[in-house]
Length: 412
Image (cartoon, rainbow, N blue to C red):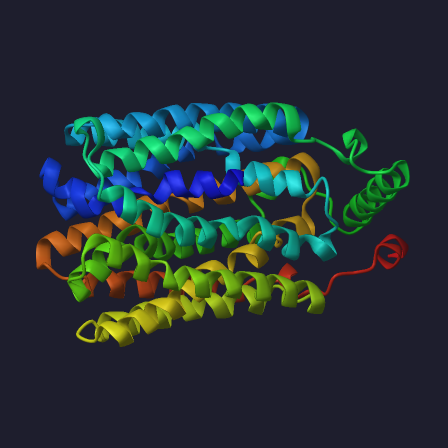
């Protein structure tokens, strides 16, 4: 629930843009820069946020994040110029920083490695769900004009308030560790705690790194670069999808938002299936690289087939299957060879630097569209970025290893 609201507040600008660009006189370049500057603010607090979840409290830190970003999301509904737009998007990113990687660290407190891709897939299903829900809801809100405020302003106001409410709920209901869970039996608490402790000992027996060693580790550097390229493609797609659909189809806003939900329905299925398949087989590398290749192919063909709305949407569905499908498996990779605070710092680094691609992708697409009045060049750029990401994933070594049973790892 928290991540659905988080992602909705992050990308609802893509739906608001259908009207706010005309109201405020923003060019595609301004929208791309404002959409992407979120990730410059996001960059600042990722690693500290992960450490706070690991060493202090997921409940306290996540509640703080949600309440502050909810307030800023509501304020987005009252902007009047590009400067205000840039500042609020920047501050929104800074407020939300640490939420996603903090949750990845948090899930490591509850799920064994061999179950983690499924758990992450269930959590990250919020990404396509946020768009499946948000697309039609935002389309409906765009049509209102309450209290003299345009519909696009109400998108930010109405979709920002739930973050504040759920932030307060989080303080009372999110459980930090298994031994604190009143909804588990003592036997269940003991079993989870024992399994995770044995897994930690097994990992440390095979791989033991300091924080600085982890940050310089070849696999971590490859994951940072791969995630940067993949996020460049993903957010370039997400933030410009409704505008691309509107331009290609000429439909009214509600029709555009309904059609824009279709790729995310495909993405949700892909995410859950790949998470299940990766845990079942113990294979991580190809379960990450192949979906990223699908992103590249889908975006390339959608650029070529823009004259046919049906074919273009089919290719965008393929790209969405890849954009959503690689994520749960990708985020199980760092915890294969890192644990505890070391894993928290590495996950924070991967997410913070990688998400700078969330600035680059939307901005480049907007810049090229302003310069050429076409999404062709931008889609080619996003396709090439995804291809590089897939190549970097295939260079990983640790991902080739099968998951070792705890007893075998301890024996080794």
